[in-house]
Image (cartoon, rainbow, N blue to C red; front, side, top):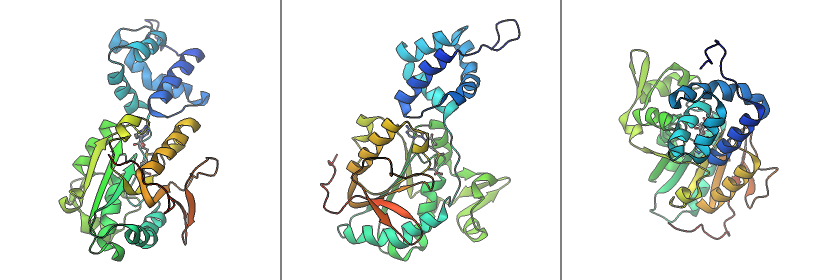
Length: 290
Ligand SMILES: C[S@@+](CC[C@H](N)C(=O)[O-])C[C@H]1O[C@@H](n2cnc3c(N)ncnc32)[C@H](O)[C@@H]1O
């Protein structure tokens, strides 16, 4: 948007801080000052939608406006990083199949479905990778699973539910897995219904405590490459929530660049052959049932 002079409306440092803090309160994602121009560029197109000539009015809208929730849906689509691909950090997914699953299985009551949650699943490649790998995992034989993914972005969830992907999603996928689980359709690949039907998706804001309260206890949480974007307080709250949501003996898997080293946490560090994961100790009180 321009002021009629050909110049784009710029965001003052103060407007940036006010808007940045509201975004952080809403979804936990924190932008340092170096992201000011990115936020300015991504949000500039919203000003003419409301007839605003500056970011101060936009700030008032998302702070006090009746439809602020709707506008945050827009902001989320503009500021989240949704990068993902099938079999990302495969060494960890292999460890989930070979080392974590046998432990969770042992701890679970016989006959019940094991629940695996991809928190911040983006376009679905992560939970679908788990579903594909479970087909081959010997520890999974005879077990039933509920696999589900959540994200705050409604756009990525539409792609996840459709199960249709382009080449960029397959940078770590073997030809064998591609041929077995996908059907090529021009420049896209459609995931087999057999796998697609095993995963369910839902819209969820990971900092929304009341929405999280409705979630039943889970055995494994994958929250990879999500909390790296959060401020320390939101990260700490989410880790506590994950601890409550896990069954005793359940596991939390983070991205390779993430750790709980600087967090005060009731998780125990659990060394695997090629990775470190976090476990809710067996003796912990179970989380509240929904
Ligand atoms: C970089 S992707 C990671 C996807 C996948 N976990 C992976 O590792 O490939 C991060 C995802 O977290 C989601 N996200 C960020 N903040 C969130 C929040 N407060 N609640 C739910 N999802 C969130 C983003 O929309 C994005 O799709």
